[in-house]
Image (cartoon, rainbow, N blue to C red):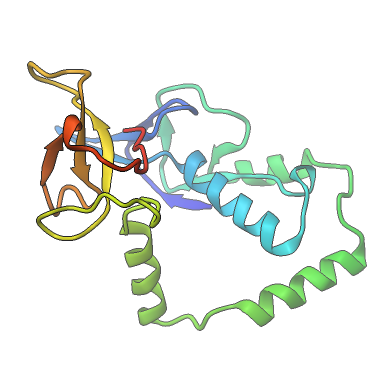
Length: 185
């Protein structure tokens, strides 16, 4: 995964979001290790590969600076070459490589604006399980179990629409009649 970043980036491997400071503005972005983990797992499943056959690597390009220590698989600039060269043990035979290349080529979607837009829309869709029987009274989307993060009700549970922040409908927990997906956020 390549990321374009010039200003300093802050984050820990286990955090959901990392931070980037640009002058007085603070921008948050999804932890690239988490995002790359999902990519790696999909590739492993599609290509029938084991954990030791795929190496996750996140590369920041531009004048990137890390203000917190990063694991060895997060680098910037030409650091990816050092990471690749550090992996000396072959994990795939030449015939496996050829089979993987053919599988990728046969399943590749066309590189179009429409394909990109659909991918982005899919990433933005709520990840609530479709088996949830509890639906939002306002928009019809699945409801998810959430915890209040601030205010007088900090820590208390409630039902919230899975499309938040687009739909802000909530219901108290005692109105729950069916189990639903629990959102860790």
